[in-house]
Image 1 (cartoon, rainbow, N blue to C red):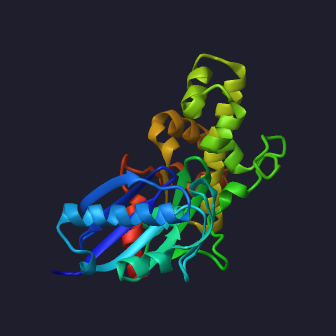
Image 2: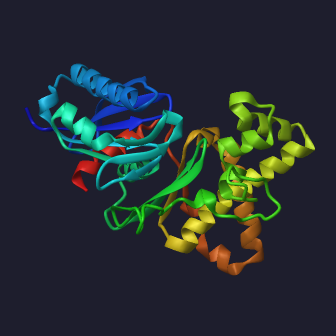
Image 3: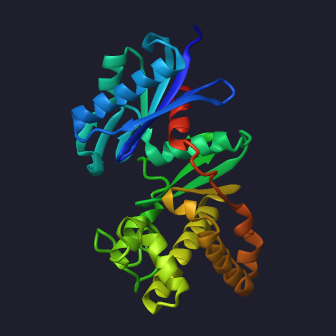
Length: 303
């Protein structure tokens, strides 16, 4: 059998594994619950790969390349994962452990970086293109694919724009800094500001703002400004051709994007330079339910 290319996205609650064809098509995908703690994460990842093999009809020794995207700080050279607290991981040699159990080299990457690579291939960008993937989920971060190659930076910090401060009078982030992008425009940041929305704080804020609730209107404005500010930073610092927005908040579609476009319009009306950047034209929403992190992980073997 031809060597199989697979990718795995280890999320906080679900682990998704995919088989990817040479042309980038996803041939099969499975989702299982993610374990908590080092051994449980390893076991649930192996379980997902095993279930994928059964569903797609290949053996584990048919695996040619395998990549894993996972939250936390990842040393892509060694496959070490650190500080993935939502998975109960302080430090885990994930690449080494999986390679020993599965008998194949396993590349490991931060999940947002993996998703950036997956979005780049899903949207069939040319190798000469540069793209940023802006993840608006529990946190806020970006992944960069420059001229077809994943860009991690000198120490792996490229794209960690959620820590950039843009509003000194804004809400505090978990580090005690005021007005960081993540505090303004992520699911966790919105939930801390609006403690009445449960697991759907962003939708709850938008509903309350639509009803005219003053506090919600203010939080909604910060959300739009935070997303617009993120795009502006990515364009001004890296001048990417495209900013693809993904993550849970992106599923709200026009309810968020229309507000962000209004921010772009205000900036453009006051600055011919900002107008020349054509920010709104560079933004695209990720297709819903696309397994971009798993897809991107499948391409790690070729990097």
